[in-house]
Image (tube, rainbow, N blue to C red; front, top):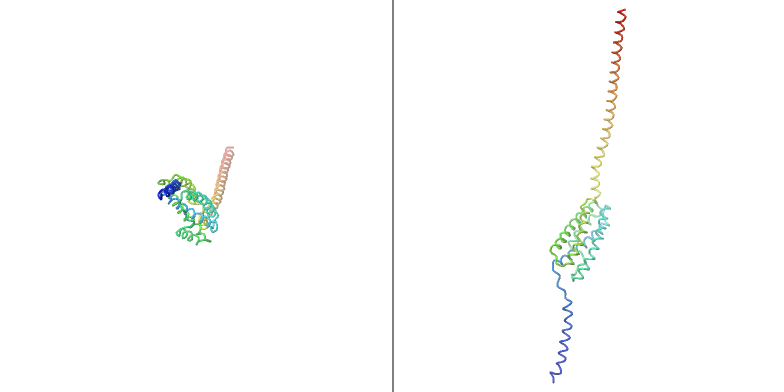
Length: 244
């Protein structure tokens, strides 16, 4: 009697346990491979650094070119990071919301030069190095990554990062000191041009003098010819008088 009374309850418990466990097993996702997880986290940290550096350049850069480059980096990497965070959340990869200690130190070292012409060059150097690292990270993910969605994200980010690197390698952004040094040869060329103009004037004067000399010689030559002709006419006239 005791067994008969508990048997239905035991069967009911087993049935409920089985139905509740089934959805949990179905909802489990395979763990994302380590290279893919690393890429999502590293790309996110890189985006955070570029956004912070871009915003800082907009405030402290000495040249409009670097300010514009900073604005471009901040905008583009914010967009990349937004897509990256959505994908990481979907794949169950937690992301940090803060810069690493190394990133903070690097940004602080550049920011310490704010207000000087050295800031722009230091900023460009740091961003070039960071974008080279980012390209290497992306290429490694494209070569060895296994998750198709993460690979697609890396493929979409690559042209953006490459464009940024070309922009900072094109030497279009110059500091004031570089502009001054660049203007020195221009001034030298201007001086050279002035000397050339002076030389041209001198040569022009010389040419004029030469032309006058040539004309004078021609005039003397013409006078000499006239003198010879006159002498011959005089001789002929004298001979005619003697004969008569």
